[in-house]
Image 1 (tube, rainbow, N blue to C red):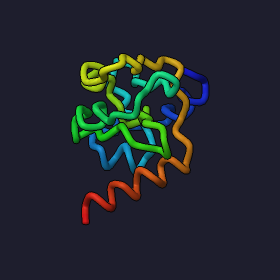
Image 2 (image 1 turned 90 degrees about the vertical axis):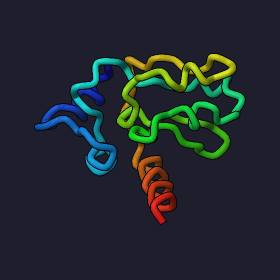
Image 3 (image 1 turned 135 degrees about the horizontal axis):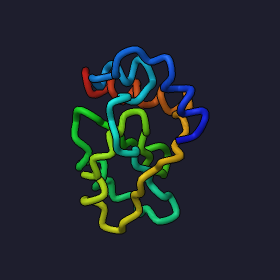
Image 4 (image 1 turned 45 degrees about the vertical axis):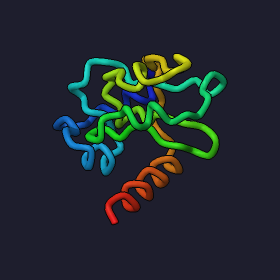
Length: 116
């Protein structure tokens, strides 16, 4: 895990147990042992199979323009997306970086749209 990601997790008192906590606090559950996943854009065909396979309590995968991306703070590393991917373009991401605020804003917009 990168230094930036470690700093992002430090100071976290209790694990971010719910999706809402992870979204609001912009941090990963500190009890998750598996690395989050990442999608290799050059290999991805944009079929969205991974999005449909991601369990709703995590909702870690989003379309960002033409790319499909995984928000590492929301991903528990379960690999359901890996199993669903027809081109094997999803990998563990031990060096993950904190998600940019612009993507968090997009995720919040998608969540608000779903909840309407």
